Image (cartoon, rainbow, N blue to C red; front, side, top):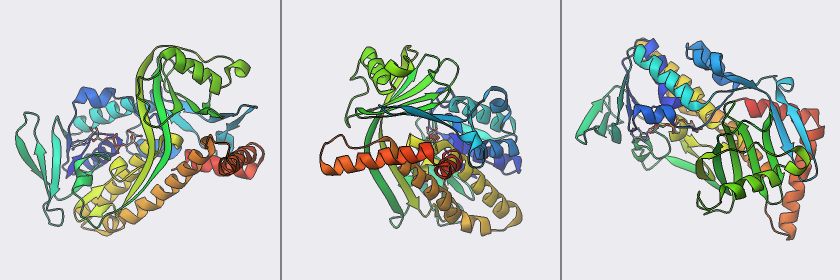
Length: 387
Ligand code: APR
């Protein structure tokens, strides 16, 4: 079994397969230090925690993860909180930085006899229609190489070799949401005991705790804005303005240790299988960070694929592999639909024309429903935490 990519999808898949005694090699183009220190997501859904616990992969998050169950929506006029653990199915998130999860997964995979080839970049997947697909690679020393397996799992993200190796018939559903976020990591304690969503006329601002002394902020900006365009002071002043610091208190400031510009885009490939090649995680579909679904979908797809591969390789039963794509796509589209709804709730046009005014009035009405309707709150809670 050859797995491309040592992210959440590839590592959860690899851990489950080695536990089933299936020989598995993970090809990862980056270094071990890079994948174990790269700050990405950090909001694990209850279902994700259950999957990790089921496979003995939750020790770290059980010890250091923090439960989280409250959203705070702020507009220019007022704010309201939703404790979603008391709504819908009553589930909550676990805040656990992805780099810590990836470190746990790498350590356990290697301890269980898994093999990770760091610094090895997959170039193409060949003969996926055959019984022995081949992965052409560039080894760490720059030499070309080849890896073969009965199956190949493409967990190498949206720009990886697996996507490049798909046949022309693969359908790519995609949408550019026309929204750009300046993603920030601040060396500062969280300013709220909730995920903060500021819906402001000047644009969206978001607040998400990562650890007790690091906080993730998002600031909607004009498409094309360079990550270093704004001074730290201007960023903090704008965050304070949009988060209503004058009414609710200033944000805890600190050095901005990471900046990135994120154009909110989504895509979904269909089908997620091409012969012996299967896609999972961002390689299967990209989802906007508005609802923190990416890593949770990656883990869910990894378990679905691992179970199907185990049935095929251990019991000779291909049914799970035949059903894999359709089963994943059901979950993917449900997550995409909610993420799309969230983007429409948090962002709107800035114009004063009738269309823009209408769109923004709809948003205010959606927020009012979310604030007052228990049925809407239950729906929100189930989709926000669910996968
Ligand atoms: N060859 C080998 N490895 C590759 C290649 C390649 N050609 N291209 C990419 N990779 C590696 C990357 O270095 C990365 O470590 O594949 C891995 C993909 O990991 P992620 O991008 O984290 O993707 P995935 O596991 O699908 O997790 C997706 O997790 O990062 C969060 O929320 C984020 O939605 C995202 C989710």
